[in-house]
Structures are given as structure tokens and as C-alpha cells.
Length: 378
Image (cartoon, rainbow, N blue to C red; front, side):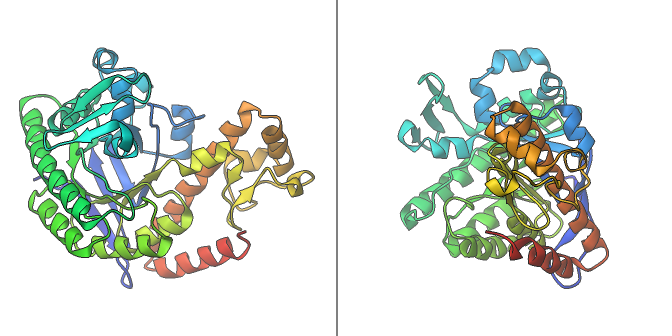
């Protein structure tokens, strides 16, 4: 299997590393945070906004795009890239987590998953092969396997079943991906997903099976599903320690500075989350001094920017008082500005973390950032 990942520097005192992913739509420096464009759009932002911040890869969701606009439109558009006017890389999630969240409306078998659409209640069926085919039509630069995700508190029996089905689906999905790559013009990569819930021996077994497939990269699944931060950190570190160094590692669904820096310290290269844009639309913004709630009355006469240390155009141009006004009057501009700032903040944080790794000082950088970030945190 061709190696798509090059490590440029490993910090001498932890597992943090910087590197480069070589993907069909350009190189991506790692570690990297990927904004989430579930429906083919990062909410409230344009492709120009994302380019301006400096993102080289975003995420979209197979489940949502499969249902709407649907495969007829997606096939006719040529690719997801042309459809959404994005000429850089796209990672597409398989839809497994969305199906997981539809627990009362789906039935999982070895063949695949039958589910009811959250849009119109119509029934659909997705097999691991079909999910690969769908993402290939999208032209995804990285596509994920269909997996069976279990919640925090799941029984061992359920975790074992999910592991077996996820492994079965992985084998079938990778076979389909290899056939499509060999027979056509599709050049995207494929990442299988480690499951095992919160049972370390099951995670070891899942990791062993994934490693044997020698896929281009590896995703760590089944985290951020309701567990405590301490449990997340423990199982993240444990699972990451099982993985080969030469493969890029992706943890799905983390988007706060604390979780991102912990992931980087454990050698994680890629992460994504809706958190920065979702909370931005609700008046929650990041700052180097800790999170800021724009809805609070204390911002009413505060004419300073969200973060005086931030170089984004929102902080250069607008005050907390104005942003609070936009929030209180429910103006659309608040969603645009807050989402832009939050994504800029995380992109800048990861960029600085990458520099700290290359200068062999990541643990010091992490400690200094979190000390300032958490001391004023509510």
C-alpha cells in the first residue's frame, strides 16, 4: 500500500508529531483540524472564507448527502468538490455515527443497516459496499468505512457484536475500494475504523484487525459518545499506543482546545467536530483567556475584541458589545462572524502546536496554553 503520510518531526518527550498528508487535492500539513460541512457546507461560511483561514481539507457526511440532494444530483454534478465549489480536499464520514444516533429507527445486520430517513421517514439500506460506492461518486479524497458505533455504557456483548460487524464491514469495504481504484479514475484514500467501546482487550483486537489491512490511514472510533473527559483521555491514549507510527491517525468528533491538544500529545494527526460552528451560532466563542459567552450582559459595554491576541478579521473589526448586540437581535451576521472566528482560532491553535512540535517543545506549549485558557474558564 502506497504511503500517503510523511512524518517531519516527532517531539522527543511525547508522541506528538508533525507531518504531511499527500491527497488527490493537495498536500495537508498535520496535525490538522477539519471543519465539518455536513450537508456540503460549513454552516455560515463560504469556500472563500475557508480558503482565507487556510484550511486544506474539510469534512462532509455521506448519510446526509445520500438522502439530500441524493445520488442523482451528486452523480450529475461530477463530484462533491464541483458541487460545493471547493477545490481542496474532502473527507467524507461513512454515516455510521448518524445511523448510530437513529437507534429507534434502524436495524443492523451483517449485510448492512436498514434505517428510516430523518427527513421523510422513508426506508433505506446501506451496505459497506454501497457506502464505498457512494463516496467514490462524491470523489472523496478520504472515505471512511461503514462502522457500528456503540454508546457509553454499552454491554460487553453489544461491544463484541459491534466489533465483529465493523470488522466484517471493513473487509468488504476495503475490497470494494480496491476494486474501484483499480478499475477507474477514482483516486481517493480509505480509512477503516477501530471500535471496541470501553473494553481494552476489544480495542486491542480491533486495532490488530485494522492494522492487518494495511490501509492508507486509521481512524479511532467509539470515543466522544458520552464518556467523561478522563475516560476519553485514557482510551484515546491506550488506542493510539497500539497503532503503527507510519500511518496517519484520525479521531472523529473532537473540537475543543483541551481535547485537541490531548489528542496531538498522543500522536493523533487529524480531528474534526461541529462544535466550533454550532456553539458559535449560539454565542459561544473561543479566546486565549478561555471561552466567552457573548450572551452575557457583561459584554454589553465591552468594546474590546473577542480576543486581543487573535489575528482574525472578526477580532480586528468588531467588539464584544457589537457581537452581543447581533446575538440579542438574532442577526444572521452573528453566525457568520462567530463561526469564522472559532474556526480561525482552532486553525491557529493547531498551527502553533505544529510549530511547537517542530521546535521540540510541544508539552511546554500545551501547558502554557491551557494554563491561560482554563484559569478564567467558568
